[in-house]
Length: 499
Image (tube, rainbow, N blue to C red; front, top):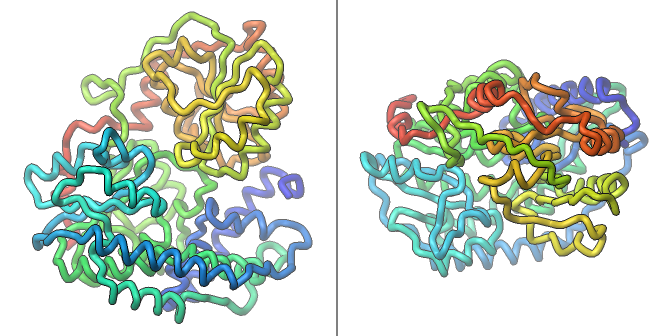
């Protein structure tokens, strides 16, 4: 599949694909099922539709068994009803600022909840405003962990806003109108991809990938009645976000999306087209973690939103004069490398096998750092690893330059953040294109190598022809182009008013 097109051909097809799906979104803009669809929102990390479209001779119908749907519906319904009863939301004051964040494994700290995305900002905003901090879990297991945690009075589970009647209504609406099938001709090159699109739309429904957007619709309607003034959320331009933008645009509620971390072109949802800009509601404001991402969103995508540089709220790295400080590099060669994986777990086997070919049984020590959302699957890989390979879940960032000679990675922000800790990073291109490139606007060294160059890199590290050191001043400038420190300026959110 990957070898069927060159990198340049694939990039050109990717841009064309983006335009084609934009036309689908425009043609079906009156259908809520289309707005709710991860397929139509080009959430490629979920659907992988583009690669299915360019597979040669892939015209067969993808039979997804409808029999799995009843079990999913029962599972969701039981959890949602129980959670809505147990975590009833408190009374919300009019004109409150509603902050929607994600509940993830890193959110749980010593029996308390930490907002992994907005960190201290909600507390700073509470000093002057009424705030509701809502945590949407990435899986019900995280919701149930809240029973052992201490929540503040204004911290809620969004489901706590819904009644049992609301939940019944949203299930009915999903079942009666959640299935979308498109018609006509939508051409990618010489191929009509309507069949591929409909296969993915079928999965949106049967696998309930679009269900979250229906849930958020009912929550949005509750928030309108509660007369919130602003809606702040983690911005990724996904389908559920568009539900809020559509509904709140009609009800004078300011929407503020916060781009919380880096992203690559693989996350095509960040790259709306001119057609999208003209036909879709977008947040009133998008706040970024730094100037580089402000520049990227303005120059490489089409937004009506006001895009402003704000701060990297997830970082607690040392800073001075509102600039991050780069840790000193340590002149020590450990022959130890860390590989940081992306969120796409389907790549892990391939990447581990390629690393084993080069480093297995050598004098190198290889640490594998899985994406935080997939650390629980580490046990699935341990039995296959050579003796010099180890899976790590924690790293001592204060000592990272002594611990590792290089950080290797693909499609992961850790490869950028490691520069702050004085460790040189190199992206590995496993797939023959630049879709997963993260070191944007970077010119300091040859930072991206092909998979077949890993062995040359290993030899260069051993014989000293590949240096682990870099120009610290240049990297400090680069990091501060990427990321702006958070200095407690939560008042910025109060200044952003669309209505």
